[in-house]
Length: 266
Image 1 (cartoon, rainbow, N blue to C red):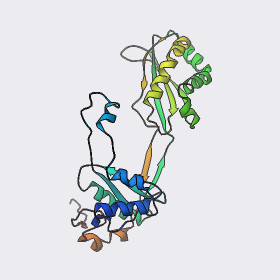
Image 2: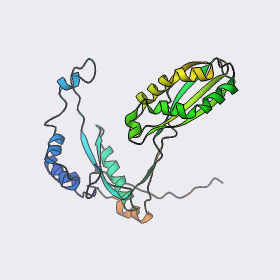
Image 3: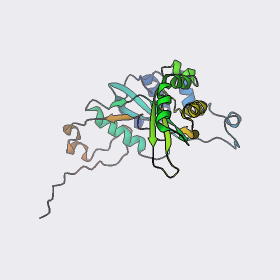
């Protein structure tokens, strides 16, 4: 729930559900309709669910809570959490409270680039195949973009084509192409799988080989998110939190922090 006036809601834990909804509506600027939806008076019906997946027999509900105290990149954020395990929302809120004293969380992301692979077998001349594919790079990337004009219009699309030659494998030499595709907010499986399927005949023509595996890679090392925070030592102030029963949405249990002397082996 980004854009809240403040995620610091002292005493939120002590309120009843109606009071929490009122406070949430005020802080996050929720409409009456949104608050009504949170009350669960209207939701997914079995009839609606029957049109979404197969063999529907009912619907399934889980508790929806809000983690408070979060400040992310200088902006206050209330974090919805759907979970049935006790203490998780409380623990997240407490750690956010500690991180808040050091400026909150700082987050960064790389471009949302995913990889789709095309495996090419029985290539008669690897050097010639690589040269022909490289010369057709622009046309290949354009053809990949045409498979999903919506993502392309939103600023995503094919970014690069990597050509790899694997000379020694259990099935012999092979050519592996990596299509690098910016999927924006989408996970991208359907888009990339469709793209490499469509590209397959052209890759076979250029390489003289036979395409086999054509699929999205589970390796997502080009699409990374990083988050960090700094907690000032004085915030921990060991005496301050030693016996505090935190009531800002935190579990009612003492937070025990001890200093252990360093022991060196003789």
